[in-house]
Amino acid sequence: MTAALFNPIKLGQLTLANRIVMPPMTRSRASLPDNSANEMMAAYYAQRSSAGLIIGEGTQISPLAQGYAWTPGIYSSAQLDGWQKVTKAVHANNGVMFAQLWHVGRVTHPQNIGGLQPISSSAIKANNVKVFIDDGTHAPGFVDVVTPREMTQADIDTVIAEFTQAASNAINAGFDGIELHAANGYLINQFIDSESNHRTDKYGGNLTNRLRFLDEVISAMAAAIGADKIGVRLAPLTTLNGTVDANPEQTYVAATALLNKHNIAYLHIAEADWDDAPVMSNSFKNAIRNAFAGVLIYAGKYTVERAISAIESGVADMIAFGRPFVANPDLPSRIKHGQPWANHDPQTLFGGNEKGLTDYPTFSESESA
Image (cartoon, rainbow, N blue to C red; front, side, top):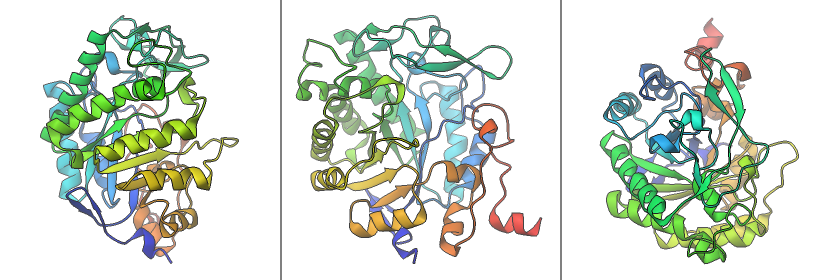
């Protein structure tokens, strides 16, 4: 029954063992003061290496790109050393891992970025959005975001260069490729969506202009590491972090067609996954499928049955299971053998130590306990 999820698949120059993806999930366990990955994170990802593809947690490309306390970066030598521990551990278990490159734009607070004002496509505050800062108690303290400043051309050039350097850094740290985070209301999403981009220059206004920043970032990264090592995450219907588009189907089919021209390895679609979220229609998904020749990954509250249906219908090539991977390090095996899934502890998702990160047992371990 689960064969569709366990057929190998080509991803760029790689051959993946199965169609099951561990998607990026912020866990806020990086070591301070360097915001670097550590042995605890290496153990966490190594435990989950049976996924066909692991996409690492959101990783900021510069100090100004950080939105939350205790998230890892990929711009300093200490951070690269930390990530090498992770990639070596994953590869030792025959896993494949991409780094997710992240710039949050306006979704931050000055306390997380050295007292500076955040940057964005436009000087528009994200309404009703909070981020967490390190308030000295080792528990997340949530604060409102602030109004960003509109990026200048020099700012845009700088960020493109930072994304490009981060992509090269990721390959040097042992990652098999990178995923560009262009979803969930962060910086690139702030340029794409009509209601967060009120620019009047070549990066704003019409759809071609709003997609220009995405286009330029991908072009620069592809020149540095090769398009076959690049994936992109989009979230067409999400309203997370205050980004909304007036015509999401038109916008995101156009974004898909643009990415297809770059011959990137995969497109990762994050469906809105809260209880009353809008649902992507079949016609929308078919339009994305028709516009993109590479590997298509979908994520968003998928059951095994929905995952198999999506792959067998041709709408998707791989399926990402987010929260289930938190509490089930052996999730592919559980899927293959029809074993029950453990539930995660929501209190230990963000921040803290090994508890709720690396102490979830495999099915066989829980049975023998």
